[in-house]
Length: 367
Image (cartoon, rainbow, N blue to C red; front, side, top):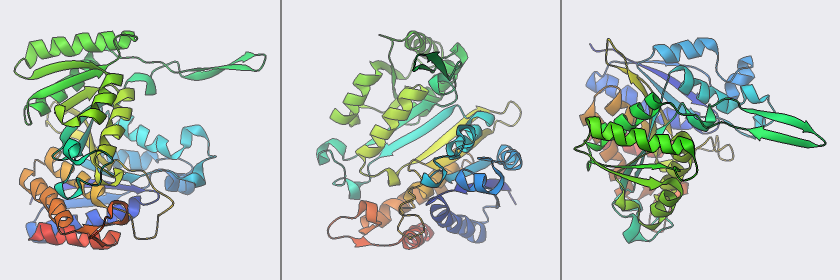
């Protein structure tokens, strides 16, 4: 039987509750479909800090590195606001991304038909939305050096962050975007700030050269990132795949997420480069939403983004495309039935708990 290793990092807040609903799907697939998933679990974020003073332990990091895929919940909360910066809950996620060399972050923004009226935008603007933002994840201003605060004296300080990109980093992320576009509508829009940033000038040059050399069959356009944010709100359906850097990708993907009506609805994937021998990529899958400590433990969190993240895991790490399609269709079917968690509740629908939503999606998947 095929063996597929998953390492679960539920994290803090609603992370463990959402992860419990994914466990149901995994158990069903193992028992009824002989999927062969083996599961291990570790600590990340605030709970890891409470346990051993680190946002993720070296031992758990080794397990993450060895797994076929990592499923990640959420981290953080006010309980850990005052811990040292280098061991803050979010540092665990950043370490996973860095140590696993997860340079490509895939953020889909999909409007389920049943939720078209949940967006703050007009229904005709949002209905049928299906775009994918490909964000470079291990370079740019979040990782560039120097990164420091300098005391200038006389009560003055200077904060420094450095935006740095090398050619190879831009080549590999743009290649991922072009390859994914070929499986969609075959269009890529590259976003940067070449009008004011030298890194943006290089980004534009390298994306253009990569396109010309290897992906000339894909339609390529360029847009300044601030204009891109405006266009995402004006008419988001003009886009298919957007590729951009770490900082702009962080902001643009959150804009795109809220177009759909709720951050609780959307998954993400973070992928590394293919292994030279096996062709497999290290990968981490996580919902876009945060830890929502204000509702943790109440059984009212929306598990859809976590379940959809597992669907992405099936698709990108295990090539289980049919199963991924079925799971995504199950989510849509449950929403069509009018079942809702509180964050997406609307008139005429039935509000259900986290566990009930997970059960309903599993039932739809099982057929």
